[in-house]
Image (cartoon, rainbow, N blue to C red):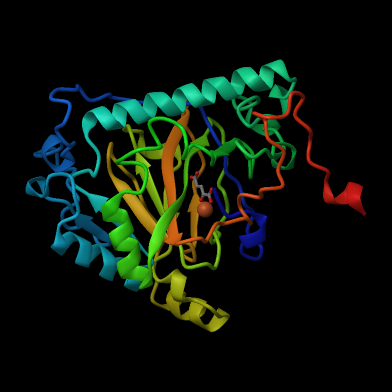
Length: 329
Ligand SMILES: O=C(O)CCC(=O)C(=O)O
Ligand SMILES: [Fe+2]
């Protein structure tokens, strides 16, 4: 998804992209399939608990993989006040659902890679030069409906919403997220996007940006564990409220540092479109995949980040490159 030059902040470069999937580290053993993943338990006693972490809401096991009334209220308050909230300790998704979605996004990426190979697009694809950092492909060259590279080494696959398993619960129209969105935005809401954000080895920072000004929420989930230097999204607390330079200066006076949303398997970070954030550089040899959804008022679709004018890889036999603005002038 997201952002991009159109929403990049002054003097800050953007970047993102995709990376292949299934590069999980320390995969969790799967036991009972309908059992939700309770990370607090899994990490208990390791000193890695986030119970005291600000900006997070803890999901409790007895909530059964849903947002309880209390968690919903706390998440709403945090979102309104801070611009984002990290759902910790449990997951809205079962172990099976996470495994399934991770392998499905991996398959989608493999299909995309095959397709690009067939049509001679690989050399401009964000995964191509990822092992040689200095030669990461230029972002402007890879813009299709199904796959967009906003910056070197990153890939957004924004059109998964109608495919299995993304086209059904818990990924499609998640009632807890819709409720949260309606509580935050005060109007009837729906999901408009389900996609995957890939960051390939060597991907650089995206630059600080907002995804847009619209009243929308982005929900980002890790379906597997990744190392801390894979390039997590960092978010600036209260930045969704900064509409002027003076607001920004006030925030920096309060020394509000960006918060890294380091997610463990099944955890999610939810942020407002207007919250300033950045994806960090991928310093590992792993391909990072984050799942994301966009929720917002019924009928509202983000045509800035997801331009319906992009050529389709699926339909076009020989995918057409988009005419650049320079060609049009
Ligand atoms: O992939 C990331 O790390 C960040 C992506 C992002 O912020 C975006 O695509 O707008
Ligand atoms: Fe973004």
